Length: 215
Image 1 (cartoon, rainbow, N blue to C red):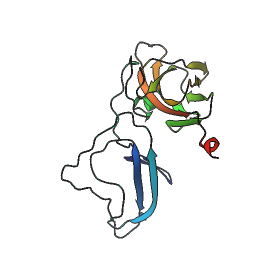
Image 2: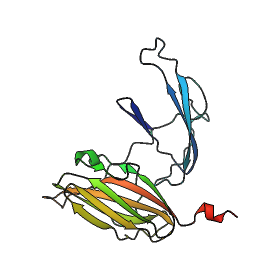
Image 3: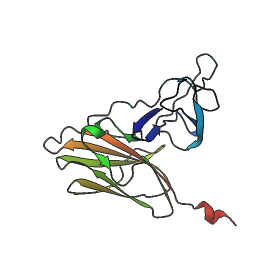
């Protein structure tokens, strides 16, 4: 788990080790607090994780589970599972597990998400389509690779790409119910032989509407 402070907004990124339900407890204290070791429980989130690109089987080393400073439920100790693996230098072939969200090269290429800042996109209904826009310098070319996961063959699915000025739109027509991975790659236009994985989206598509099932 990592966190980032931007002005008066704290962004917390959680990478669950496997599919399931997780509790996220948030603690805080005033900046001018006299007792730095005393924190207050301010809120709690219930996270329902339905997809993990690379599941991790956690085995406690001493049979105990740690707790946050100040006590309370939820959370635990253990290694930092949020550190992403190094990105490939070129688009891979075949099915691969991806880490959702921005990769280290995303900022290096000066990219930004325009339409979908959340790496997990959920679509519901028949004939669903997704249009994702990425901002980038005109000197950078961005391309996408769509595959179906998990349990798919890893075959690449078609993605419509349209670049206009400093943004590229990726148009995806989802062929059916399932979970898809859209890996984005960037390269300098004067050196297209060297590309890097810059951002990964997980697209969850469900054709059946739960409301229609109710009688």
